[in-house]
Image (cartoon, helix red, strand yellow):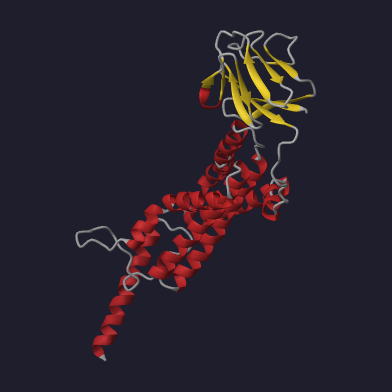
Length: 325
């Protein structure tokens, strides 16, 4: 009966796998062993795996300096039996033993969602989402920068590459996490997914401006806005976790929802918390100032004061008309 010996790291991830047909396997740092281990706490001739006539495998310690151990860190005094799939230790070095009849898990079919997430790592998608973000930033600059400050356009536009690079930090962290757990890094799909979420947030923000304008800044518009941002974050974190971990789908979804709610907790708290009677902060009131007054191209202070004065005169004229009727 063949035996398979897996060499594990400290996270018990497989770093080497060997298959032997003989009944004795020598383990240690010496180069004439069957499995050569490079852990400095392993002796040159540390232990052997021996199969008896009944097919049972035994771990025998060869009077090593740091000892050998089986399940529950039980020390091997002479020799101990090993079951298929059991982990043992030579000093600090973990090994796992399988026989060739050990059952393997069922083959997993390809996930359609997973394949689409990996396909998003193509450069065309990354450039498309980056272009949407750049256009959004340029439109924001055009709307908020007054004409008198047009000389600052160049400075603001030069910040776009820095902003796009800053958003590479999160995908890089996830890629390192995957590498640390000996999985594929998926950096480009993670980057594309992050840019896609930011682009979706930008498009959703434009829609919320339109919705808030037509609903005159009502609570319904505000709740809709925060709900949309929360769902975008849930989708982003679900995709991140799918690419970076092998957790169950339910666990990924639960973690994504919790993290998204934590990220938007301030906005939800502002919407769901009743206003305090002692709150003296400024509150928008559509009866006093219509949204059309401050939505539009950026204005300097002089233009703002002129339009504000015209608004006061218009409201005063309407009041007088009502009084005369």
